[in-house]
Image 1 (cartoon, rainbow, N blue to C red):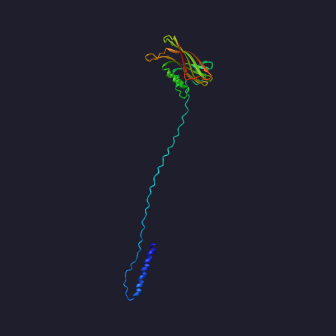
Image 2: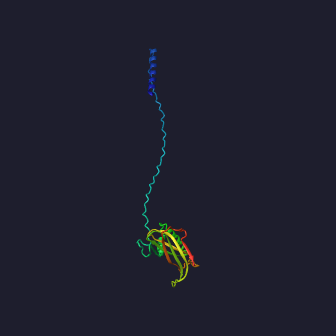
Image 3: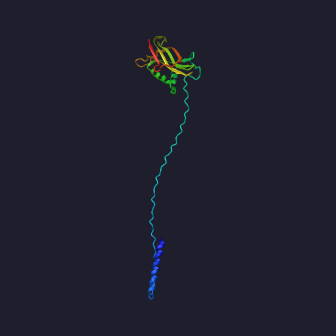
Length: 229
């Protein structure tokens, strides 16, 4: 379009000049510098595109889940040996029994995986205040509940002789599966500390009679029944 307008203007100027020369032939033409009409191209303003800054979306760091290592199963706590019949126990028919050592009681009470040991741990705390006996039992067959009767006596520590029978105790406890061990605490109502809090060692449990029952178990919330003399 720019070129077309420029050529059109030049054509008009040329025609005008020719017409003037034809009207006055006698006149001497004065040489004039023919000026060229230059059509200046108008530059269109350059439209600058706005630079749109793109928001940088930060990718969330994907946390890799750590694989948890599977721990090996806990080995069963063995306090009375693995063999059967058990060593160091006295047998009464299907029943096996022995008086446990302090280390064996501590071992069995530390077995947190066995719900039946809750009774043992509770009764051990009671023995801090009251005189207690203990017996560990097991059976060839499953027992639905256990029963132990005993007598509490005061003895002369120098001679070992019985000074007095203080009372009798009946104790009941949870059942066991065949060939499983259970220590039963025989908790009396006899306080065994002097005025200074020192434990008196002159009270003992004797004449133990142990029964493995196969009938439904009684209520075990109260497990020791003491009858004083």
